[in-house]
Length: 301
Image (tube, rainbow, N blue to C red; front, side):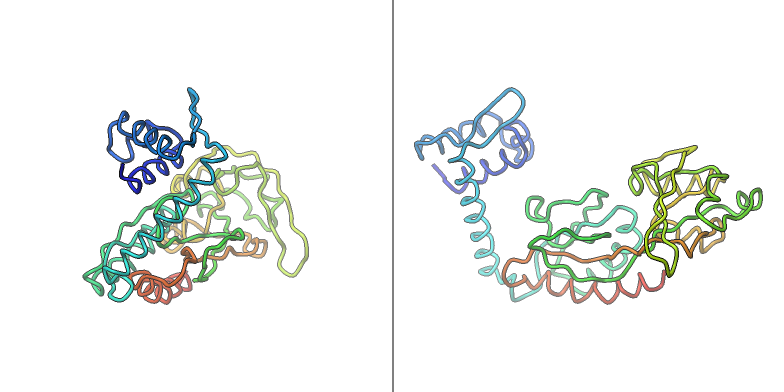
C-alpha cells in the first residue's frame, strides 16, 4: 500500500465531505477512493471515518491521524520544493486569489507585469467573492478587503477602501441631494446584499463618536456590485458599494458620490499568505513586486 497516496486521498475525502466529491476532485474512481481508505484503516487497525448517507465524519482516531497526515504531507511538499530549487530561484506556479471585480481591475494588470518580469513563474488567478482558505484550497497569496480575523496568516497592508453612497446625476436632479443619511428615506434604494445583507446602512458623522443606523427599504436588491452600480447608473436608485466598484462610473460622470461626510471608517486592504517558515522565492518576489504597485493603485482611487 502506498501510504502517502492513501493519506492524500483520506485528506481529500475529509476536506470535500464525501467519497464521491473526493473521487471527482482527484479524478479517481469512487471504488478506488473507498478501497484506499479501507486499506489504510486495515493497516492501522482503527476506523478513521464514519459514513452516513449524507456525510463523512472523523472518529477521534481519525481526527488525530488526519492532523498528523496533513502535517506530514505539507513537510514533504516543502522538502520537495526546496530540492527543486523553488526557495532559491523564482519559478513554479503561484496561486493568487482576490475578489472578482477588484481582481479584474487591479490584480490582473499587476500580474501581467509580474509575468513579464519573471518568465519562470506561472500564475493561477482565482477570482471569487468568497474568502478561500489558503491552506485547504492550496492558495499562496490572497487579497482581503476588510478587517482580518486573528489567525496564523501573515498580512501586508496595501491600502484602504472607502464605502461610498452614490447615485446618478439624473436621479439627484429629480430629488433634493441628500444632506444627511435621513434624507435617503425620500429616495429609491438599490441594495448590494453582499455588502449590506441586513436592511440597515451604517453611517458615521466626521468628528463625532458613535454611528447612525439607517433603516432602508430597497426598491431593488442585487447580489453583485456590478449590478448595483449598473442599476444606479440607470437611475433606479441610490446604492452603496466599495469605492473601487464605482470608481469608473464616478470618473466618467455616470455616478456621483454623496454623503461623504458620513462615510464609515475605510476598510483595510491586505495581501496575505500563510505564515509557515521561509517563503518560497516565487512568493517573496511577488510580494515585493505587487505591494508597491497595489498601493499606488489604491492611492490613485
